[in-house]
Length: 177
Image 1 (cartoon, rainbow, N blue to C red):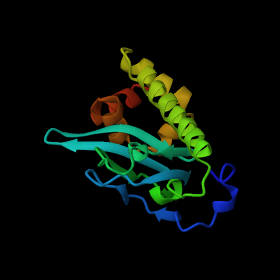
Image 2 (spheres, rainbow, N blue to C red):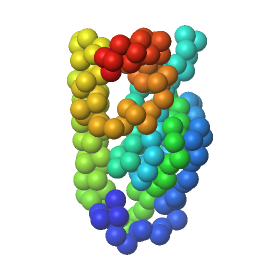
Image 3 (cartoon, rainbow, N blue to C red):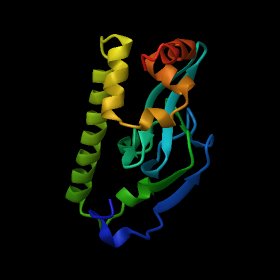
Image 4 (spheres, one colour):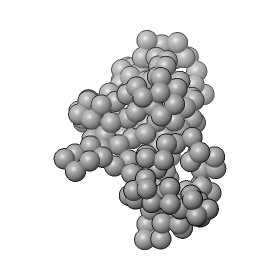
């Protein structure tokens, strides 16, 4: 973002957020009005309903979080986003992209790039969680995100892969993970 919009680095639409482990970036139902760049740390995007919760994705340093953002802040989050470790996040408010003096083609190009990143992330997730057996999914995840799985609590990995934490413990004990 700073490369594409170098004159706006200290603008009022940009904020640095420090989250401690366990704090929420977004709550389910909150209006989506910001684009987030994760400078450090890991976030977990999850959904809660009457049947429990499931982890949809992990967002970590060097990635954007923008689901629904580009719809003009009329959407509410279907997910809660929680810090799994201390995080440093740059937040861009919707006002940044509604500035009258911004080149609209540049804004469109940036959204295309960000949307492509999100698309690639979702595609990677589908490849990991497709119709493969669990151990194949696990190996794909470890290859796609080396070292990340070590930083994520087992209970959250279990909800991401739709297995029980006990199953992961059993596989670890058998040295299959």
